[in-house]
Length: 287
Ligand code: SF4
Ligand code: MG
Image (cartoon, rainbow, N blue to C red; front, side, top):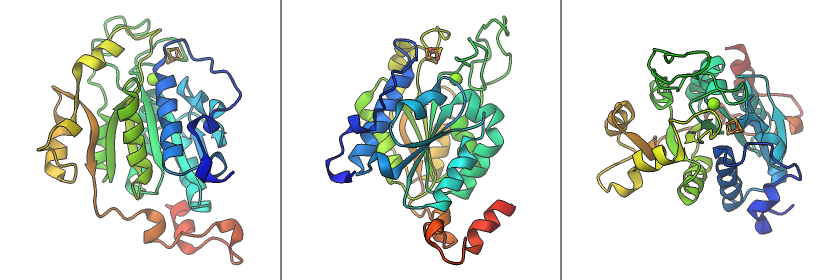
């Protein structure tokens, strides 16, 4: 399929989503499809790697190459796909439980490797598929069936983790703000290096605290702040560590980001190399 005439609906598969009506994951996925079409990609140059959870079903609902990975392990698969064939647009998607709990180790190392992939985390601050347990991003007083008094520990700040690991593109989005979500994912795709888009995608069935209304009332869009400079590391650090606010937009972007493939000469489709994978790629596997 030529990318010239691709519409976002071309990224829709013929499978009917089984997400609950009103689930934030619908908006997250629509924005991803629109951003892919807008950046000139087509289903046959796109690879979606999904984790496990409600969000992990996205690879079935989108039309592209896809792999539904093991719990918490979508990022190493996405990293491998991109290094093996840099011509592919690689989108990795999963939830807060998948990415920031069992997948937390992979998350940090994927960020610091800076392979040119986009990671969209559907953050609903709960485990939805397993019917409502506290996740790494749940509030400390969030009452669930398995934590009746709340998890009693502060939530993980994924943006701070990414910054500490040397992240080159750190953004936050909201599934219900369709235009901004598309724009932010689009910028993530266009960034040269690893891009994190932590996307608030409310779980309407099990989370009655972090709701659409809550995010609509609380989110502060950094694109409306003329004094905010996403390339200013210290300003970004202050915003990311500001526990009193929830920010929307690109919080940090390293202007000098050099993706792993460029730094290590892993720029060819390995299937087409007569002598096999270059040293840079195999070094990565040995790390
Ligand atoms: Fe979405 Fe929550 Fe339903 Fe899962 S349980 S599909 S996260 S609304
Ligand atoms: Mg979740």
